[in-house]
Length: 352
Image (cartoon, rainbow, N blue to C red):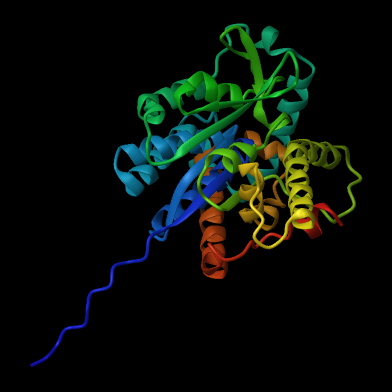
């Protein structure tokens, strides 16, 4: 008589928070990261904080989760970015492009950005046309987003009047809230919500981490950072300098928040003692937090800031592929660290 071994149920998935940075069309890199993470059933997303393109990825993922689980999220993300590519002014020309055409494209994008910086969107775009509105409304069901019970969403925008951060939570989310999070002030008119004008959230929180720390049950936080942190080469040309200024600007709020987080961790460690119970629950959350990161330093460093305006399908697919590869490499190297230890040394990075 043979005895069958007792069945073993699969371990519960790791609860993971996602912090998705903004960066124009480079958000397609984050799309690739999310596509790979959604394939891994060891992971469950407890909360998502997103800014600009990160906000668009966040709402597409949440709507998709409610419309078909993991595969539904992957489909909705692909549908969104496919529509972004289809509405590119250069999509129809893609079959005739060659590698030699790419420098011309980047030169055109630099010229367009320089031209727009000398004009107000209230002058050159008086009708406030934004193709992203139609794309969002066609591909993302915001009623499903607002009622999504499979993750929590936090979307950042910047109040024009004060420069302060505004975090839109689940029940407040709409196409307007996402467009506010992605409103570059030299390209689009400020997005007004309840009489308050908003600009891109990257100026105040790119993305904001505190809502995840305060309100999500996960102790592991994965940051998807698409603005390169380092450029070791010497920058001497005006376009290079402007590109680096753009990257520094849109990393500044995140670096400040990470530094504050590590300072608080250090203070807690100095004051803590065995058996100590914190009266402030936030302190316990900060102490337990483990930070991880997938960044675009290597994959995106060869792309200047001007390419953040490039939305042709070929380019978006290349970014997607790079993001998937980065997420796959991260999972192979660090998936076993989830629930055990941080893989980003904030002490070394933020408090040298």
